[in-house]
Image (cartoon, rainbow, N blue to C red; front, top):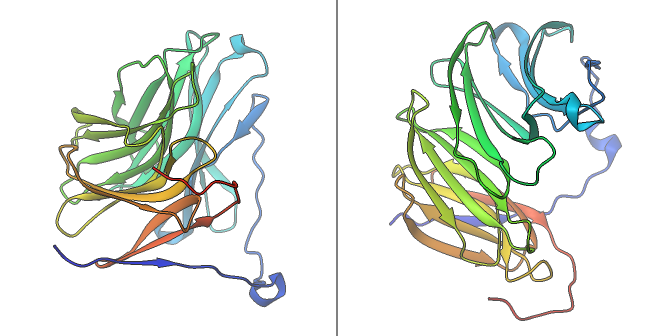
Length: 275
């Protein structure tokens, strides 16, 4: 197995040291009352930027929407696409947007039954980069828990991998969810992961050997959390799993084929016993 080095970075800086001129600043007013949790922006050639968000009304019957925005290099809104639900579901959770190998877009989020604590459903949608055509839409099976998307990637072979979190309502535990789709948006396999009481998955990256790393935060309860990395096969088999007590809340990114960067923060809990 190729050796992998892990780096924990703590960077301090002053605002004045990194101040840069502002290229543009844009505010988009939507039709409903609440809009938040934008995805990372995606840059296309010729200075085109695309991002996404979800929103909903103050009252449950107003439903909710998932929006994709496109702006030009001057910050002008040139296009937006909306998916709107009133009943029986509405969108919720973080929006995750990626550019695919064929230069289109995949958006993943979740939606829930209105007025209910159950019936959550993870969704993914592939759309053309001009936002005019929906190429496929995937709806995951309903769960009786609260599902939230954490990360979304496209593998070298075109498979779509989703890292998510599942929160039961009756206790303070959390499960990890790993979902694999093929390039046509068809379900291949799913893995529900619970190595600790709290399994808060975050980032997912593909390794050079075709397997995947999932990073995040986990622990026996909310007071004893630590960072973790887990290597998982495309079929959902856990190849190895490792905790990193140096970090309480953890994020992960791939620096190169042999280096992973873990970043986050710690907070004192007064406890020293970890599982």
